Image 1 (cartoon, rainbow, N blue to C red):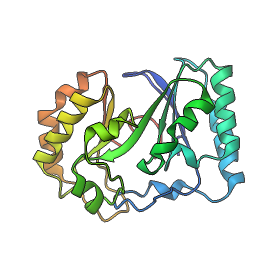
Image 2: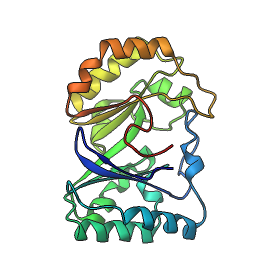
Image 3: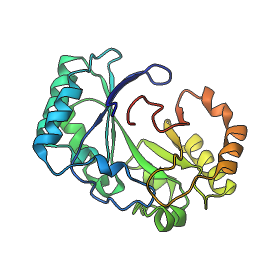
Length: 229
């Protein structure tokens, strides 16, 4: 498992994949990332502190992800991140959170004391597909509502059951409402959901221009940020 990397192309930054407590929701139909979670605080901190030691502050920007939300990281891990922000001169932090924590985001902003870009796994702005098929339990209804809390949606492309119309609408929304977004091409995993190769081919043919957009990061493989396995 690779847990530290440097993103050198768009939005240059260091990124760490940390271990966390179980996801507050943990029922998304497509997700097996939560297998990386643990209930042992000692195990979590032991792994995380070693990973965090690799941060150099090279670009002054750090992204911290885990298989869930930043609120599921232990206090000792959070304190270590805070120390590193000061020691390494980190000026911007990327964190990710589930919709369930939407009213607590300012806690992290106050704790770390640096600007935070909050990412959220939206997967799609289609309400029914998001909540009934993907089982996200993210029950906002409009882009405006999401934007009240979060800065950067993560969108999934290429799951059987999605349509071209859904994806077109998702792309319109992220381009017109948000300054930053991540698009993940679905990678088959241990879940029951299947990859739609024809839809992915269509997406690549029609949205290759996003590769040149400095604010849209497209992950053609789920390890394109250099972390994970």
